[in-house]
Amino acid sequence: MPNTVEMTIVKAINAGIRKAMADNDKVLVFGEDVAALGGVFRVTEGILAEFGPKRIFNSPIAEAGIIGTGIGLNARLPPCRRNPVRRLHLPCLQPDHHSAGEVAEPL
Image (cartoon, rainbow, N blue to C red):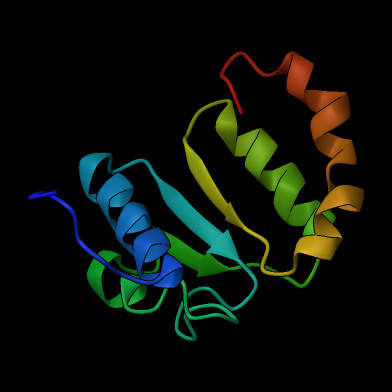
């Protein structure tokens, strides 16, 4: 395939986030240690230097808060929430379940 590029999943996610941020200046990235550190798996590595602290920033260690903030921002902005540990996602989806129906834009 002529337009295929081989890369790791981490690099592919990083490239996707960069493209979304480059295409739309309203896209934000926030989560645990995502800014300077680049996240626990380095998925957001280098994005702070490229887009600055107003577009990518750290949040407190509070998974439900990250999900809830994403829902709130989704009413006006297209956020990119980053929760690095999958097993913590299910308890955090409760805000989605209760609030998603009130958000005019798709999650």
